[in-house]
Figure 1 (spheres, one colour):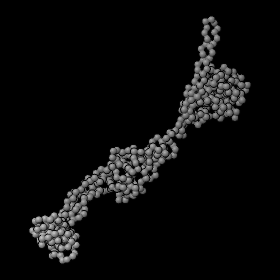
Figure 2 (figure 1 turned 60 degrees about the vertical axis):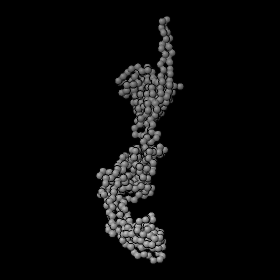
Figure 3 (figure 1 turned 180 degrees about the vertical axis):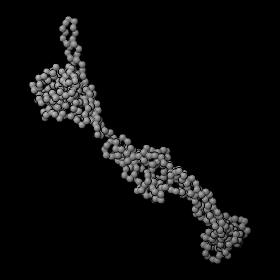
Figure 4 (figure 1 turned 180 degrees about the horizontal axis):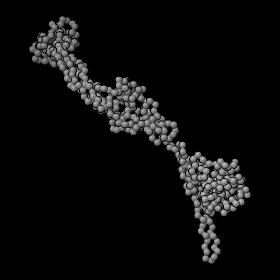
Length: 456
């Protein structure tokens, strides 16, 4: 049974709907509403007559209609008119029977892809009898439902009978097809894991969303008080970060000049290698060659000290700072007390910037470096004196004139040094030349870069 026949049955069951039709026909309408259904015994005779002949009622237009109650498509067209006039809402003036009929007709007509628009009414989508369009929604995250269910109806009229020997049959009826449009939808996945927005409306943003975690995005927790999260900028900055250059002294170099001083010494010679058994020879304090009986076993014990001040002086007071290229994590959300890292960055690539003078806690203690904003940063040079020992020595000779060296020698440094059998020895006070270790310090650090591993 077609929707036209089903609606006709409903009309007969719910006669009060005729009063609604009558009221609508008296309104300032331009489309036939009264011709929606075949007349019933309860309808006014004049209305039934007009409906039967498809006459439009209303003050602005009266023209033949296409007997809409005779086909499903006619029912849908007429119903769509009612829907548009009332924006898909039940008219307030319908009695209970009329309301039941109105809802039932809606269910029948919508199944044929009834067109119309509604905002919060019986329809959640707009559509046409050719194709239902995607629904729209105002104030909600999801689109409305699509157009009505797809219904394909094909009809073909039979040819008219010939009334003369030369007449031809009438043309066949045209076919009509109705289809349904798809409903609106919301994003199924988080579209951008670094935009700070819950794209798929699941309550989780960026790194907190399982979609992003499955794609390799991850949170890195940083120490309390961190000023920012950074990764190495060598080779360019990955997504979600921006380039930032720090002034650093890691690559800066200073040099030192050392000032020497002469030394003096006190030395004794022993016949035994332990520098304790027997009697030592007289104390020697001057440079020169001293002889003994050829072949005398000898060991030496003595000390030496500088006779003047030694110093280490930097050759330059300051040198320019080098640039430390880093990438600051500026995009992404969903991480408590840290940053959201893209799949191109590993956890061990992360560094935290802490206030100047801070100690780097684990696991960000693999590398630390004082840094400042690169513009105008400078490194102060310093030189630390690590040693100023004298170079005083004793050298053994086989003869008694310090000409035939045996190859044995030792420093005069407070330790016992056996040199074996000899005929003479030579003492040289030497000098004290300090060992200097150059150092650089950042002039005005603004923070400490603490990293899980040394940055590239």
